[in-house]
Image 1 (cartoon, rainbow, N blue to C red):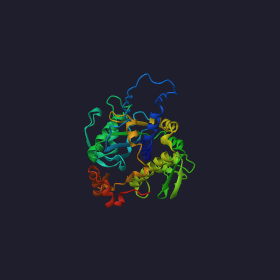
Image 2: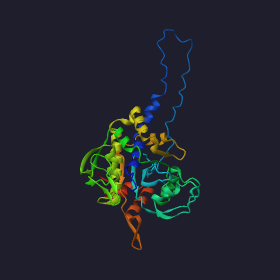
Image 3: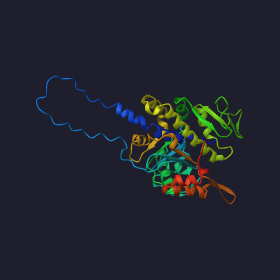
Image 4: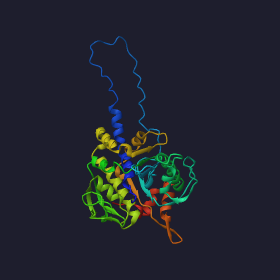
Amino acid sequence: MTRRRLLGLAALVAALLVATGAVVTTRLVANRPAAPVAGPSTAPPASPTPAPTTASPTPPPGADLKGPLNLLLVGVDTRVSIPGWEPHADAVLLLHVPAGLDRAYLFSLPRDLVVDIPAYPKARYPGGRTKLTHAMSYGSRVPGDKRNPSTAQGYELLRTTVSRYTGLRIDAGAVITFGGFDKLVDTLGGVDLYVDQRVESRHRRPDGTMRTLTGGGYTGPQMVYQKGTRHLTGWQALDYARQRYTAGGDYTRQRHQQQLLRALARKILDQGTARDPQRVEQVVAALGRTLVYAGGGRNLIDYAYVLGGLPADRLTLVVLPGAGVSSGGAYRGEQLKPLGRDFLTALRSGRADAFLAAHPSLRVKN
């Protein structure tokens, strides 16, 4: 069976982190008891009373968090119906928030990026140079228990690998699985997305049912996403973001998943979801067990609060150009081109805006 691709899923986590911070504030304020109000009195005071002391206000969640912050967002292929199936990192995104916490950059790393994965004793992995996606699966192995791989362990090894490759400290992150994503988008009422090129689905028929999978591939009528602004339901949004067998291949797929993120963030903000506790509870409930949060000792609320004031239009989508790597005529994976690696250098030194101004082709416009 062909592996499922989860591309847009991790992007949703970023949308929630960025957009739900305001509702955390609302809920905390709303749940505090109101101070009692004294009624009118005609009796004069017995004696002058000293001015009441004002208690120091309780600092908001994450008040001590300072930028820059780096969040690792991972979409995994995990087949819960198959015992022992190891999760594969099919979408690897980084959200970088500079020191001022007033803007953010989102970019993807190719799942097939050739990297050095360090040794990981917990999983008895000796280390090696291979595709980035394998860091999740190798790290998830639990010695003596092949039927129950650990997604948390896989994330730990992937986080270390990504941090070493990019030179960025990873402060927190999340892993989200295939299940529940289409339900989540439907909970939001669908999403409006600009489809920037014609995309044919390998997996779905026009009515949303799965195409027939045979030994020669998928057969039957295909769902087609035509260029232009489209309103997508949950299954359509996921299906569109999964497609990589199209012009531009996996790099086009990375762009589409980032565009889906921005569309979801805008939808959450435009609906006022971030200031409606009941709506946020519906959104979080739709995620259920499909989300694994890794905060490095920090509560998710801390990051949600800090990022809650970030407008969607200050979220810059960045595409890092890459190319295939071959050895002996055989495909080994992907590597970033010098321009992509130079962006990482600029990001680390706080010069991302200037670098993007000099290289506008790296910005995802739609």
